[in-house]
Amino acid sequence: MKHIIIITLAVIATLTSCRTSEANYRAAYEQAVSRRDDTSGIDNTVYDKIRREAVSSTRVVNGDTVAVKRERVKLAEPAEGEILQQSYVVVAQFKQLFNARSLCNRLKAGGYPGATLLVTREPLYYVAVAGGSAEAMNVNCAEFAAKPAVAVKPPYPLVLEPAK
Image 1: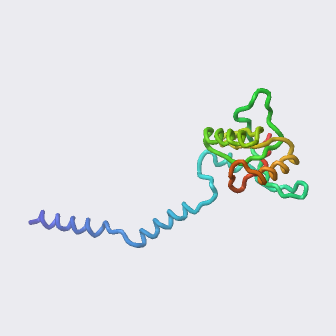
Image 2: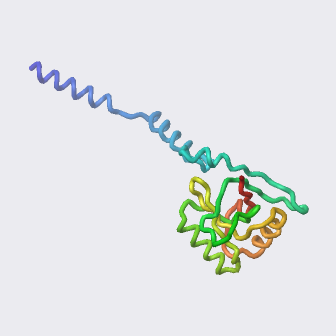
Image 3: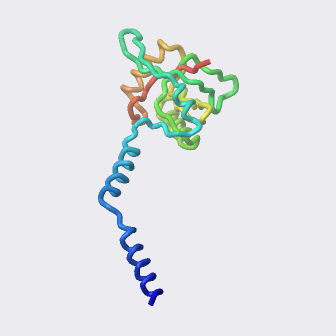
């Protein structure tokens, strides 16, 4: 008889203690939504510091406002004798080399023979359509915006200046 009473109490305690409340569901939902609404695009990885080092600004060149990003980059696949230019017109960025290389080849076929790949330490791959002086990049940005070989998403095209 004593065993039946102990088992009955254990079952009752188990059934009443496992209930979730609406407050618990609401708290979990709000926490999930707050994580999803984080629009920084930078997750807490070892590359967080590298991404934050990239300095974005705007510059007025010949009366036009141009988005300029300054970051440490190098040529991903340099041709023989190719050197890093003073600045580049960047139209896209990728985390995978395959995707960046594919877009670069499409740009070359679409009338931008100077398309090249730049890579950061992360690695993050930038696809550039032209390289040269900062003043010339303003004109190249306008030309690409007027006649894009591929659709680009904001904030592209922008000028990328390799940091030294």
